[in-house]
Image (cartoon, rainbow, N blue to C red):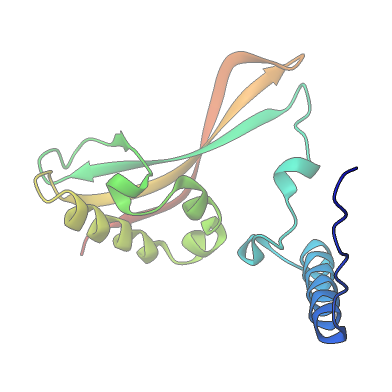
Length: 155
């Protein structure tokens, strides 16, 4: 015969705080879904899972180009990652509206890059672009269009 385990009941206080936690999480998730924005993560609406791209539309990809002190006349693509600028690309993408209104914000990327990579040439200009890759029948056509979001130049 198997030993029987004694059932332990939760006390009213333990039940109350668990119920309060469930109610709070429910309110946060519902609030985030209805009025929240990406800043509310993990309670934000997860738009990347709730939208799709038309098979004959375009896929958008954000990137930056920089001008350096060593080559001030040339724009070169640069990575957006914690090793290069201290931020992930999603963090920049989440602020595109703010960056478009205030391109001076891009100066912080140049300053971060200078601190993280002091052995590399200083960035004297940054521009944020969105590349729109054209689709046809759900596949790439090879065509794309770049849209300038913002441009910053060192003072």
